[in-house]
Amino acid sequence: MFGTNIISRRNLKNFGLLGSLCVSQSMPFWFLYQALPVLLRQQGTSLTIIGLLHLATTPFIFKFLWSPAIDRYSFARWGHYRFWIVFFQLWVVSITIVCSLLDLKSQLPWLLLGLLLLGTGSASQDIATDALALRLLEPPERGIGNAIQGVGGSLGKMIGGGGMLILLNRWGWTPSLLTLAVIMMFALLPVLVYREPHRKIVSSASKSNSIGLLEYFKIFLRFCQQPGMTIWLIILALCGAAHRLSATVFQLLLVDIGLSLSDVGSLLGIFGQSMMMLGTIISGLLIPVWGRKRSLVIASSFSLTGILSYFLPTFGYTYLPVIYAIVSITFFSIGMVMTTSFTIIMDKSRLEMAGTDYTLQSSLIGIGGIVSATLSGFLADTIGYRGVFATSVLLLVVYLRLVVKKFAPVKFERLDINQK
Image 1 (tube, one colour):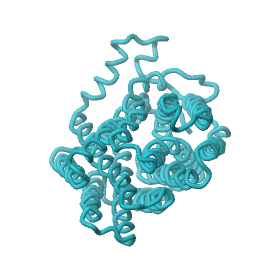
Image 2 (cartoon, rainbow, N blue to C red):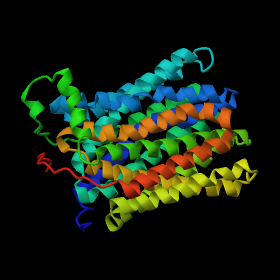
Image 3 (cartoon, rainbow, N blue to C red):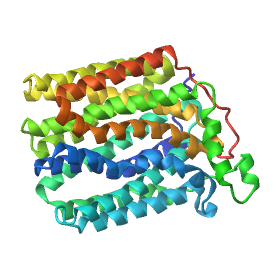
Image 4 (cartoon, rainbow, N blue to C red):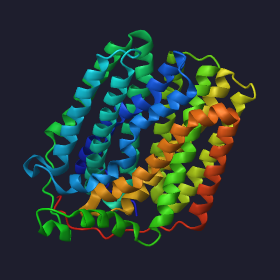
């Protein structure tokens, strides 16, 4: 049961650390996902080109490929995962500063390269942060722990998405990105003073100093061979595809119906993320009561209602109260879906391979999402906004059916990692 000792001094400290990390790591990604595409659309860039911009986030698809290295290698005296978190945060800050000095039009190829490097650093930091979270949270703490991470992520999205849109509209490109770099540096302070407990590696691979290529990929194979894991990975991919496809096109639709950068930033980046935080918190509190599977089914059903509401503006219902109602439903439900999904992902991850197992599962959400986001502009040009939303509904219905009929939670045994 959800124990009364979950909210202790130690847990509050751990929750605060994880929340701050999620703030810092979500800012650059959400800048790529929300702020930059809207800015380019306002400047007249085609939907197809904007869709291709999401290829800069491909490191989030393939980050599982180098996650075993982050699990295995580090400077232990600095804290195994703490070292990687600090290293990649400094990487992202440096790339952000360089990108701020580039011209958005005349130096677009260099900017895209910079964005790709930024995405690589952010994705790599994500591996270490998720692994650290898994080590810090006991199973009964994972619901509220993921809720706090979700709140931190939403705050980062507010800054990187809505906040950056507002700054870009008022200050321009260079001052806005430099401001983002400064904020990311401040967000790093909690992990700089944190002392990570010693990490005891108990896997058989730890007996040697190196690992062969075949054994390296057997790590992934062994994980995927767990009972029910294939269905679960398909569920995660469908979840990412359905939500990302509709959300990507909806923000472009907002530009087409006449909303300014500031309007979109305030609507999606501030109000929307506030609703997502609310859904995240409520989900975190209800998961111990409802259980994992029931929570996922209820949250996903609510999310289906949200995606159906995207059709309203395409039929002329573009009044501001209607738009805000749509954003309320969709963002609130996505907060619930993601909090529940990431709680289950933790349950299915082994502590000795925390970064690899967690990242492999979460990457499937990213794979589904980035593929659908990349195709979103082409689909919108080809079948229109309604066709895209109908496709999202179909994907989510298939996803829900798999959750109800095929999904069964699988938990790995807890290991002694000497974290006390």
